[in-house]
Amino acid sequence: MRKIPELNPETISRIIEMAWEDRTPFAAIEIQYGLSEKEVISLMRKEMKPSSFKMWRKRVSGRKTKHIRQRDFLIGRFKSANQN
Image (cartoon, rainbow, N blue to C red; front, side):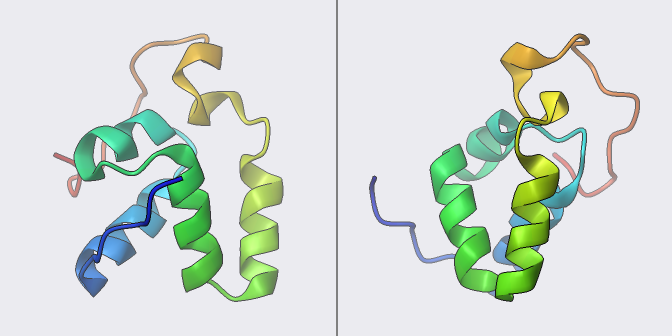
């Protein structure tokens, strides 16, 4: 895995927000910020408290909406005004 690039606090905050959103797939984060799913997980581990990271991993693991190939829909019902 490559090293996570230096990101400003605003970008890190937005990536964490997108990672917590149920309907934002990891692919969208990769398209916007160039971070793979593994890199997002690594960033979340680094930036969050251990208990918050464990809660997030439990929530995200196996969730269909976070992985485009597993989705049973193509377009989500909601798009945040913060998304490009």
